[in-house]
Length: 397
Image: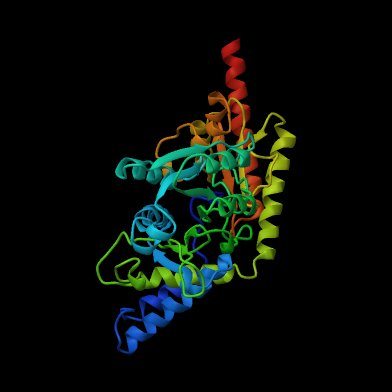
């Protein structure tokens, strides 16, 4: 089997699996004061530091969650509700404007829309992107300048479907000048490019995208004794775990596995170079044999791991079935919104015609990818292409 769907989930790394197994044997609740509880607590606190290191942050910034979707929900709802409370409401003002790029993950887009429904006076606007899927900075500048009330901006570090890297440093500068807040979805980019938490107020991460276990993620929040805090109101309340920001017994084994995967990426330049070579070889081989192939976002900086492409005339649904029969696993667009193959909102925002968008596929490479996987994928795609061309010739005759 040839797995090229790491952006959906990356197979668990051996070191992460080992850490999960070890943590399952600890047998203590991190909130307990006995020996096993203290051992569990030590695992959690060590994990905070290792996960924080993915973005140049500190352990005190980290709130562990069930994954990126919960982290994005906590950041957005927590920021808006937190801005209504106490000193933040008096000093900084209520968040009434939310700006999200049109190509954000559905967990950001849907949550922002829910906020507008739930809170009177909160308005949501989607910011346009270029034909290569890069945020329109001038549109952001204008949006921040117009209207009253504090703004919250959500921009992913890199797109999960086509891999375009967003100009976060430039976005941060505009946001800071406007006195606004910035949420960066770091999930697709973690381990693939440098993340810098100092540029934002909130950042979301996920374990299973970097070779950790599924069901665990993190929200990094600018809230500590060393800096001014970003507003955040907890969404899960109860036992007061994680300084009251996210109640519930911590997922010890998941957190330990997350930390191990993050630690494996601390010296990941060699891995990233190998993945980049595989992605580039895949695109070059496909383009050489099928010159009509289109690679989305190829005019912009892209993650080393991601190739969003289309072979015109080869429908994504047909291709995925054929690829699977050949033992090649890919995706069409974002897996989190699949189960059915539908036109990508990312490609729509980029102005890609619906007929071409219906052919969009994504090959994503990771720690376990090999050149055998790359070659098998190219061979399968070319075989499918020839089958489609033969059918078209037969129908024309």
